[in-house]
Amino acid sequence: MSYATRLDAALNRRQWMGWTAGGLAAALLPRTGRGAITGKKVVVVGAGMAGMTAAKYLRLWGGSGLQVTLVEPETLYTSNIMSNLVLNGSRSVGSLRYARDTLASKYGVQRVTGSVAALNAGARSVTLADGTSLAYDRLVLAPGVSFDEAYGLTQTDYDTRTPHAWRAGAQTTLLRNQLVAMRNGDTFVMSIPKAPYRCPPGPYERACVVADYLKKAKGSNCKVLVLDENPVIQAERHTFEQAFGQIHAGVIRYEAGVSGLRIDAASRQLSYLDAVLAPHTVQAQAVNPIPPHRAQGSAPGGWLARAGLNNSADGRWAVVDVLSYESTALPGSGIHVIGDAASCGLPKAGHVANQEAKICADAIVRLLQNGQPDPQPVANSACYSPITASTASWLTATYQYDPAERKMKPAIAGGKTLVNGVPATAIESATIDGDNFKNMGTWFRTLMSDTLG
Image 1 (cartoon, rainbow, N blue to C red):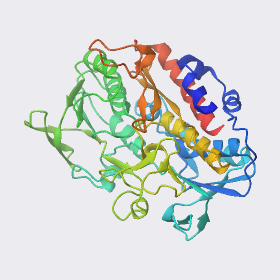
Image 2 (cartoon, one colour):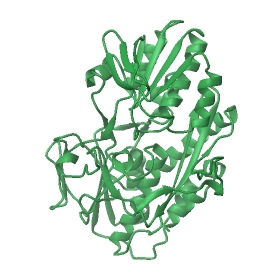
Image 3 (cartoon, one colour):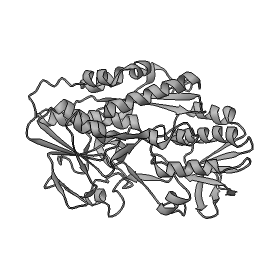
Image 4 (cartoon, helix red, strand yellow):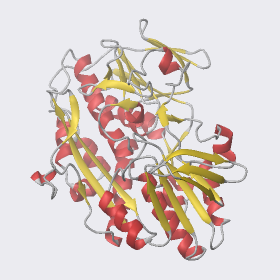
């Protein structure tokens, strides 16, 4: 097991939050014991949580002789993590924007502004939209996700009338403005797509934040209708059942197993079938449809699809070997896929993307030194969920490599089992309180510092 993954897995929640970024980065240096890397090039495409972390740690662990180029069309990074708090006015979109300058100035990452147009796996080159060609020895793809046009809506509808706001930025501001315009007695409707989607607890967290805001700012007669295409709550089930049924009782109405959702963007009227296929029609004042996701570029004709990397059964995701995150579609190609675009058995979330990036970076450094990836990688997933403007819950889980199935699988949490005998694979906060809300800020700052600092 690499020193990086051992350390991340070993840190418990309070220890992990308490580390400073500098101390964490120093402690994570791998002890490979091999010579310095020279004359090798790694191109990283996408500078979200996964791509930024990979670029940083490739240079940190690979040394100054390893050339790392980070390709990203946007100058600033806007964090999806914590963006639900923009909806209740606790944060601004601006407070979630981060410059990537440190990656270049401190770690020597070369940055290129651009987006991918094509990959040539045989020639080991990436062609950008402006015609620039970048050669590589190893390629790390962290493109994130795109959002389907669904429920009768278009991308223009998402941008102007019915925002999903599942990529923080202008749509987040639009959704915030629509909430501000609501009045007591109005209805807010949000939908949740079938898993997998980015941030499993995120939609339920959003419903709580919106309900809390509407109760306090508009009145107790407002309604939040949550239409979930999944059969059950996908994360922190105990927490959100308590939040929906007690803390926000009378405001949030949660319906699981819905299907046939259709939305009229102009009138904001919705129709859907409930779990027993009974039809319903709802008139909403604000509609927040979270559409199905797919890896960026995986749609028919997209650059990821043309390269044959969208090899999941549904064609939406890139399946990878979790020892190195190299694509299983093109084994031996030196193409690795991390973050939300990858299908690897781990949830799609910011902290997980940070973890995947470190495992991938460690593997690439070993491979470039004629070694082999760590045969027993471990990853930790941790996140907080605000439930009101001053309280939060948390969830943490550890994932380990199963050599029999060649997958990352949840480890039993502390050896505990649920009352029905099923192994407990995650530890959920026992309380929803203000201490968790304060710790959430520390957790977020530490994660962002480790990714960028």
